[in-house]
Image: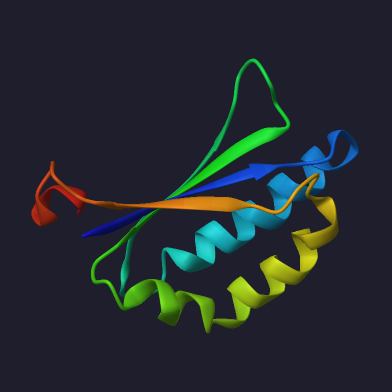
Length: 102
């Protein structure tokens, strides 16, 4: 498993639009065979900050995800909603093992 945390800082007046676009992307992403999880979380004490927790089955699946139409629509839709460019950190999964994600 390959885990990516994507950090997004959204403009205050774009929170709801960002959530709507991101939830649509997340729901479609879960239909991809290489996506085990796609969580969208919002910081409690600073609601303009979000983290996307993306769990892929292989190292190649993130690039396949970026080729999908729903990702490309999301990317273009939210580009102007961000207060700064998004960033990410990539992780190797330790626990649960691969079967624990299903």
